[in-house]
Every structure is written in structure tokens, then in C-alpha cells.
Image (tube, rainbow, N blue to C red):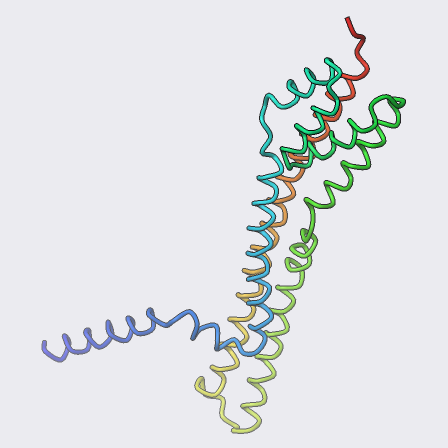
Length: 224
């Protein structure tokens, strides 16, 4: 009975040690290929957070903003409207500021000004977004490179020792499995972040287009 209790305690202790294996130690077993994979992960998190903040700020426009612009334009206070736009540092306000500069010219010129300004603002919002797409494709491939390196290591160890025991091949197996898992996880995270930001950006582009159309309608509608 005592021997059984000791065996049970020993098993629990061993399980606890394995369960408490530090994440850093686990990642270190992946070998050198883990360095670029970790860099990809950190870059993914940085770009996602930075772009998310930027996009959130871009959409931070008062719901009454267009009504105030409309009132100023109808009263002929173009400079006041431009100054009001400059106090709101967002894509749509910068677009409208450039369009307000063109008031007095043909409506086609104003539309072109809005369109060109809109393209510039979309480019700013999408900055570094393509990097997430690259990471989503590259990270799993890096994991695959780690898998190949792990297999090579296994065969090298066997060729050197002529030993097929688990202790001989465990290092290579660690490298093979850890790099594959890490590459896939980072790739999935980058893929999700990329498409989440795309959805947010599409919403902002739709808002910008709606505000642009509303502004053009304001200029083209007949005055009372």
C-alpha cells in the first residue's frame, strides 16, 4: 500500500514537472528557425494594434459634422468650414478641406479633388497592411523549413550514433513539431488580423464615400 502511494506521488510529481515546462524553454527547443517566427509574431501584433488605433481614430467623426459643414457652406462661410475641418484631423475632414478649396470651380473639379484625396487617405489607412498578408503566408513556410531542419537533425544524430532510441531523435522531433506548430499559429493569427483590419477599413471607406456623396449633393442641390 505504501509502495503504491509512493508510485502514485511520483507519477503526479512527474506530470506536474512536465505540465510546468516553461513556454520559453519549449520554444528554445525549436532551434534557430524560431527567431524569424517570433519576429513575425511580434511584428503582427505591433502592426495590428497600430493600425487598429489609426482606423479607430479615422472613424472618430461627430455624427453632426456634415450638418455643420452644410450650414456653413449654405451661408457662404467657406473659410470657416475649412477651419472647422482642420480642427478634426480625420480622413474625411482632410478630404472635405481639399474639396472646399475648389468651391467656385466646376463640380467635376470638386469631385476629382475628393476622389484623389480619398485615394491618398485610403493609402494611409492601409499602410503596412500588406505586411500582415506576407506574414500570413511566410510564417507557415518558416515552420515547414523548421520541420525539414528537424528531420535532417534526426537523421544526422542517427548517422553519428547509430542509435534509434527516443533520446537520440527527441531533439529533432521537438524542433520538427514546435516549429510547425509555431509557424501555423503565427500564420493563422496574421491571417485573422489582416482580414479583421480589412473589414474595418472597408467600413471606413464606405463612410468616406457616403460623406463625399453627401457633400457633392449639397453643392448641386438648388438653393431656395
